[in-house]
Length: 527
Image (cartoon, rainbow, N blue to C red; front, side):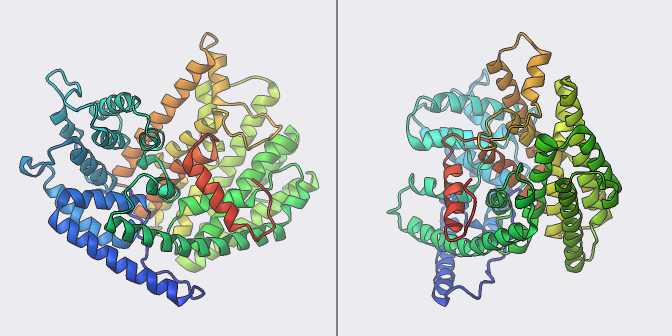
């Protein structure tokens, strides 16, 4: 079996001596009670066990029962190909398929042939089977390249579900579980289930206590990040640049969701912040000559090479060098590997990609869309962030994995593609910046003058869909990376639509509300 997409390797114990003992006692009691319910259900009713695991995942509390869930799903996988053990309806088949594939089991799309007619069409499913259609649509989100059956299942279920106007159907179509962040969909999930069910009451109570614990941790992180950002002084020196440390920490909170990774979240926010700041320097401030000198100083990793630069750019460069050195030292002390060369390489690639874009748009000549995207994948900053995250997690660090992560591996490339294309769709209304660095959409329309903007956007959406399929394949294949790193990478992809679109996404509203509430007692900039 390949490694698991959803295997977080969370610790069930929270190291929070400051929390009241009563809360910790309640938490332990609820974990035991929920565990008993899960064990009893999976032992007596396999289909209900699948439903219960899905519920635990959607409430964000499944990590407490990782071993129990793994044992149950392993049994389900052993029975997967046996006709005597197949659930009879599409709901059961689709739910089991999704839960198994999420955990890395090699389950075939052909199981859905049972619901196709002789012509291969999904006509053996009733239009009023909303629950089954929703499960089928959710399962289709884990499709990989050339999986036509799953693609057809997704199209078929979406077409029929579009006729239903219920909130839960609309949310499933817009925000399927596999491409969403469960923790920030909890409120929405609870609004659409029967809270009167005694088991659901226990699970929802545990989820609420979990949220209180995590909230306490995050509040401390927000305070630490706010103080770090203030002491760094870049906001004061760089009036033109974004000043949004809380927003930047939203990335870390959403990607590294293990409560025990507080230190890693705080450290990860630092390079994330610098990516935004350096992006603004290239986009809004520096002349082309200044940017060339800045990039050369990064390539040489030498502050003296930047003597000719404006003071604000020299200050930014020094911050980059200092923060990289400090993070490298911490990682070496904790994990015994000094990542300084890898971190430096990632920053060099980023700045060279930024400079390439600056040259393009200074000349007034847009590159071909393919050329723009190749460079844009690097300038997205995803590689910088994920290289830092890899070393901060500290799992499986060796020469093979370090060489692999340095080389911009496919898992990082596909996530960077998703981010670049989402960003370039032009939906990031909160950026509110005056600079112009072009977009894939603009390059594509220039290359295809007869294509409408609407068709061009459809093309970009198709590219995003393809990148997700490739990402699914990477996450379900054997890799030198740890399951924790892989899951965190997936969370980056899940976070992208929240950060780069401002529609009616309930996750976005929940995330912003959550972060604002954490910072309610702190002096902070509005989003």
